[in-house]
Image (cartoon, rainbow, N blue to C red; front, side):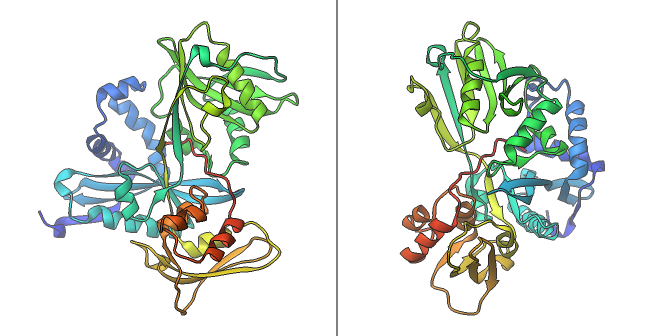
Length: 403
């Protein structure tokens, strides 16, 4: 089987069935799993993906008209330190096994990143099926997921609170408005359009419910999305814009104590839930969640909000990138007093160096400069580490989506 017979080209909606067949084969999505998620048949699932496919940028390799390798990029937006970035959400990655080890995916990823750059998507997110694979391609971990289990007797005691919690339609406008209010002031959060909301609900059971907490002024300060099955309260997600809203939402969860034996859920921050509970002896496990990648370093820095200072700051370094030549070389990073940044190529010799993976996780706040320097991922002087610590925000990305 030779490469000369293969053709790379865009994948339109006319190939939707082949697109989904390839995904189901590569990720071994069974009919049983589709039914558990509420899909009665494969065709229903394919129809649900059709509107998403129309908005996505999909490219693939074809062998005599058959789609045999593919990647998709969703046009999305994320909030990074109160600035909105266009983001390329990479998904739908797969190659039939008989076509593996031919370099097809490497070329597809390079082409996908080139097209992201053309569309001014200077940052890319993905959910990794293999962290080592994507690290080799320039992505790095930027968020975690914490899974927890709380027994009924460990739930917070119900106490009088101001405001109210109302149950609402889980896929209605009220919930979407609440999330948008939260996302606009949350570092790393996705600004969900119709495409993103469609992906958010795609694999959930049919019996989802939701409740919104409204403060005394009638403003939605948070929500919980959940379902109850077999005496277990399952939390898909809980968001809140202040501590008071968090307590009110847990009040609502605790009100179900006569109906449940335990609560199981996920949270997408760097803050374990156990410390906030009176009985902190709960089960929690943390795992890497999403990965990110800077697509165009110079353009990304041009939008990046550094912290202001009384002096201008400058750093020269060598940046390495396994795929993109426009991200390779020596750069001078200048940070103005007001926090505006600018990255320019320089011809001078640069002693400091790091790769695009380290730069991405550092700028997005997942790992601090001091830690990255200590483990050898960031090569620079202690003074530069101190400067970067002062220049970068200290929030960790929140990302609860899946695509």
